[in-house]
Amino acid sequence: MFGHFIPDYMFRHYYEISPEFLRSLGIRSLILDLDNTLAPYEQPLPDERNLAWLGELKAAGIDAAFVSNNSSPDRVELFNREIGLPAYFKSGKPSTKNIKKALADMDCPPENAAVLGDQIFTDVWAGKRMGMTAIMVPPIKDKRTLFFRFKRLLEKPFVAKYRKIHGKDFQL
Ligand SMILES: [Mg+2]
Image 1 (tube, rainbow, N blue to C red):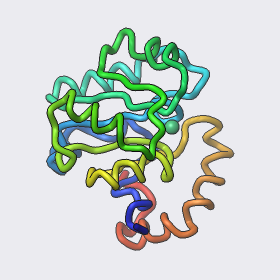
Image 2: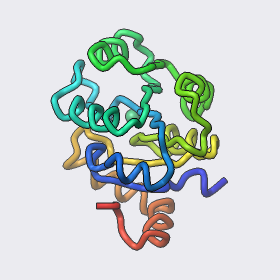
Image 3: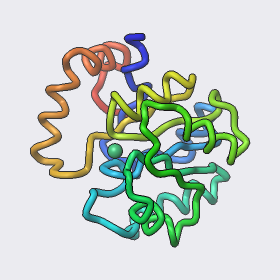
Image 4: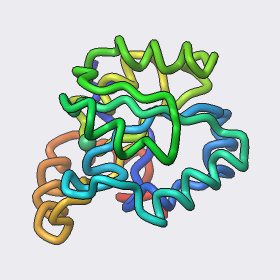
C-alpha cells in the first residue's frame, strides 16, 4: 500500500521525459493527466511545447491518452481538439475506471503503460494500483511557490523514500 504512493520516477517538467526513456522501461502507452501536468488550468489550448512533445511521442510510436479529473468536458475537449488523442474527463482518479478504458483504446496492458501526473493521491495512486509505472512532475501552476510546498509535502514521507531509492529528487 505504501508503495502505491511512491512515484517510480520524478521529473521537473513533463517535456524532459523522452521517448527513449519510456522505451527503456518497456513503455509504449502513456496515460496523461492534463491540469497542472501539461498545462495550468488557465491555459485552454496546447502550446507549442505541448504539441512538440506530444509529436515526439507520436513519432516514436508511443501512444497517449488523456485521463483527466477535470469535470468539464469542454476543457478536455478544447485542449485535445488539435491533438486528437483518446480523452476522458471526470475520471475520479484514483479510480482506475477511465484508465482501464484508455488502455483498452490503446490495446496496451498496464505493465507496458505509464501514468504521468502531478498528484500522488490521484495520478500516482491510480497508476500504481493498476500495476503501471507512475511518473510524477511538480504542479505547473505557481511553480515558484508551490514547488517548495510540494517538496516539503513530499518529504514526508513519500519523496524521502523516493530519494532513498533513487539518490536524487529528479531524474534529470
Ligand atoms: Mg493534475
